[in-house]
Image (cartoon, rainbow, N blue to C red; front, side, top):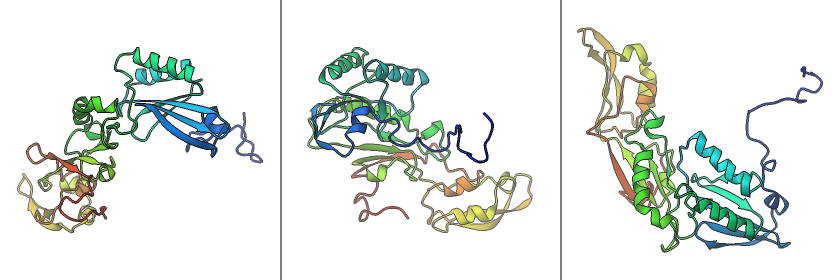
Length: 291
């Protein structure tokens, strides 16, 4: 189909931006938008929403890793095709939710999920430990102080019994961020697992003039801990470089983002902090968000 300047959107296929929100909604949810009377948790991981007209929507929530294979995604889609007319959704905590419109379909769905071993654990609702949110870690991030997927797997293995039950006083949300830039929402979780750097960045004077714009590296520091300086490289040449005031450095890694010759990761200096109450809890001062 050719381009028609009089009707530029006709026949256009684009992947820019999301679909309109209601084009892929489950039919019962779409028909009863804004008309729900109440909802209840029938058992751990199973929710029932009832509309004014009596329509019911059963939701079964299962735990899922944040990083999953294509084969696993295809299996999730096969389950949705078999029981849910192809509809499913992912929650903000990386759980998978299957939605059906009758108790009979819900029972068949649960039996199918339980028949697949622990691949699709049902839970994550009510007074439980719901799925752990985490950041990229070593998979992709360039400033991590720890991996993300590994510690989350280890923690959730120990807390797994609390995912599929509701025996805690309230729901507990745990999150892990591999550095204090905390893109994993650890600032707003009940328990924060936070990767921390404890040493200032190292300066590679053999590379710094070739890969860095020094004014950008200096300006990147939120505490003004980086100043221009003269240094000598391994060939004995005097070069323009920078120096770091270790007393002012908060080990955030902003300078490394702007200058690859200022690496921050260190096997002895890096570690993990556990903050009960989240990253903005009363750890050393009153709760406050970062600037």
